[in-house]
Structure formats: C-alpha cells, structure tokens
Image (cartoon, rainbow, N blue to C red; front, side, top):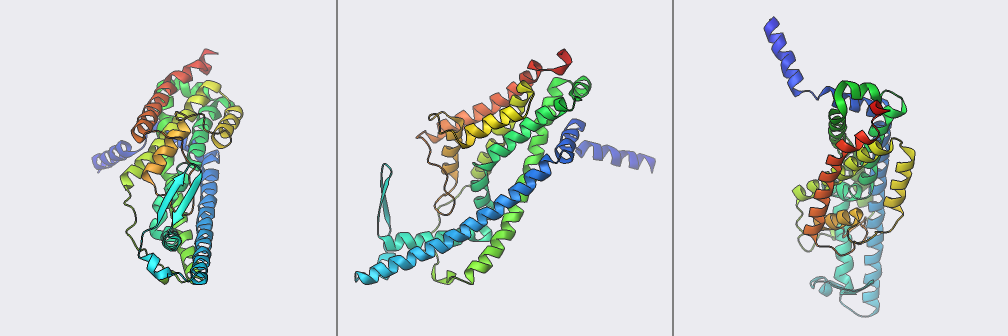
Length: 327
C-alpha cells in the first residue's frame, strides 16, 4: 500500500508543472492581473460579437438598397446573382462590378461569421493581432517586474538562479495563454449562439445561403501564427521588464508604439504579423485588420520566427543587466 501511494505521488510530480512555473502562475492569479485580463477578454469577445451582429444588419440593409436600385433601373437582380462579382483596386479606390452578387455575398458571409461554428477563427483573427500583442507583452512585463517591486526577487534568484527564473516565466506565460484563449472562445461561442438566435428572428437568414464555397482555411496555420504572436510579444515583455526593472514606463511606451504610432516600414514587427494574419485568416466580413505594407509572406514568417527566438534568448542575458543580487 505504501509503495503504491509513493508511486502515485511520483506520477503526480512527474506530470505536475515545475515549482518555479507554479510560483509564477500563483503570482499572476493572486496579483489579480490574470483574472482582470480574463474579464477584459470576455468583455471584448462580447463586443466583437455585437459588432458582427451589427454588421449583419448593415449588410442586409445594403442588399435591400441594391435591390431597390435594380428595380428602379429595370435591372434583373436574380440574373446578376448567377454571375461573379469583380473587385478592382487602384490605390485606395475600389471599383465593384455586379453589385447584386457583391452585396449578397457580403450578407451571406456576415451570417456565416455570426454563427457559433465560426467562433474559433473569428475569435483568433480578432484577438490575435490587436489584443494579444498588448495582453501578452504586459503579462510578460508584469512577471518580470512584480517581484522586484515588492523586494523579494533576490530570494527567487538566490534559490533558482537567473536562467531558471526566466525559463519559469516564459513557461508560465505559455501556460496562461491557453487559459486566456479558451476563455475567449467559450464566451464567444455563447455570445454568438445568443446573437444568432436574436438576429435570425429579425432577418430572413434562410434567403441568403452562400452561392459559392467559402475560401479554405488552414486551422493549423492560424493557430501557429497566434502562438507566434504570444511567444514574440510575451518574450518581449519578459525581456524589457528584466532590463528596465519597472512596469509603468515600458508599458506606456509599448501601448503608444503598438496602438498609436503608424507602421515604421515593412520590417516593423507589427507589419510582419499583419502580413501573416491576412495570409491565414479571411477578413472579408465584420472586423477588418489594417492593410499591411507590402512584404512577402515567407519573409514575414522568417522575420517573426527569428525575432521570437532572439527575444526568448535575450531574456536570459537581459535579467543579468539589472540582477538585484549584484546591487
């Protein structure tokens, strides 16, 4: 009996997270930072669904307006639905031929996007390139500064060393990421289920089935790009926090750079991820991602991958710059 209990305890230890990772996760939870992030993500998920519901109403009104114009000009709306729409872009100007099919497809795509079946892709494309960079940078920054702020990082570094401390923070961030993403998706599914039921009772969804197969989406590529976002910006936050030693100033600078300052060229990291986001997600309905500065997709992927690896590696050297054991 004793030996079986000992084996069970050994199995639990084998499958449990390292002590340093558990400690960083406890700090995230008890410091309220992770619960606040989860609540904020849930609220933004509901807002995203509300915006999509509004987009369905807008697209429906546009279809009705186009039908009225066709009737006023003696044109055959149904006949044009059997023809493809052609969109020609010249600089910032867009010209559409066959408005009937274009507006109908917009309505059909909006209905599909509002469906609970679209929750995963719609959530990832909305959060992955707007909120996740900010969220995971700030989480990494907070983890790298909170112990210094409360004057117990010396104890942590004395017990585990700089390398294991940084590794624990990086792993804790990767553990927190699925918690955040699952929360977003669960809230999104519930919100889309409610919104679909409400909006479908107001508008004739059944009259707008898709007339063509939706573009194929690579779920593995989508998850891979979102994971790259988490690693890149989370590692950046951990590195900056280790080097700066304070939270507020780097957080303000990052928010200004990420949300206010325009892209600083094709090799701006924000541009890399916009290029990758548009490569793996369909932004034809609802939320629209910013237009990227032209850059080849393989170049963007290579730059983002190398950048993430460099930020991860530099974290182990960055913590030595302001190592409290040396002061």
